[in-house]
Image 1 (tube, rainbow, N blue to C red):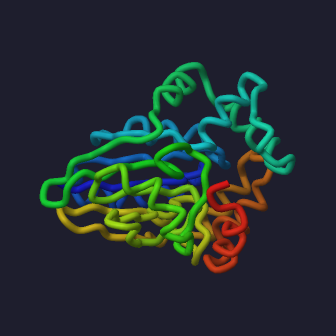
Image 2 (image 1 turned 30 degrees about the vertical axis):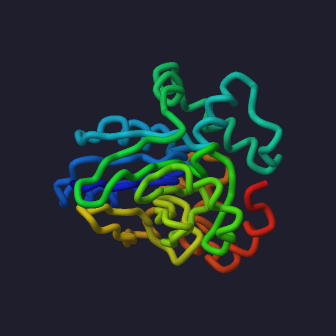
Image 3 (image 1 turned 90 degrees about the vertical axis):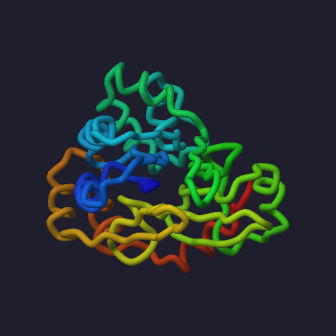
Length: 249
């Protein structure tokens, strides 16, 4: 079985389009959309694309998706910093009732059995919620209570926008990275399961062209996204250090 995991698209349509070229070329059996299709500069276009891939597709909820739906009803969480509230509200205005109904049906986790490998659990942040933070450096002592009881061969997650592949006790824990908003070198990051092998993937795309497409949108932080999420993302080291202060809190 071949499965692609696409996480943290964040409305970056050019990055998503580039990844899907590779996905379609591999004749995959299944795609898992791992949460946080939203918010971002092209939410309407990204939603339309992932909801009609023409490939068997599983969805899980991300905190960004959940908060965007909540914002339609004036119920955005107090956890959202003031600097990001306008962008989420703008994204919420791009949704229609059918979008909200679809997103509301996305579960927190999904399991896929891969022949020759075993059960793989997909979650956005951790198996218990869509907002907790852990990284490649979080201690096993903190993580084993989350992963040991699952009895799966592997867990695939996202949320922190950085790829890693590590063992936590007897569980392989792999972060798929971010398609649209990486904290690493520029590009679109995703994950491929090909029978018994997990492969971390990075797709190059036209960064300058993508940045210009974002700038032409009405997204409130279009220039910031074009610069900081496409052309010059923050480094993995910088973000790992930042996230370590908030891990599993």
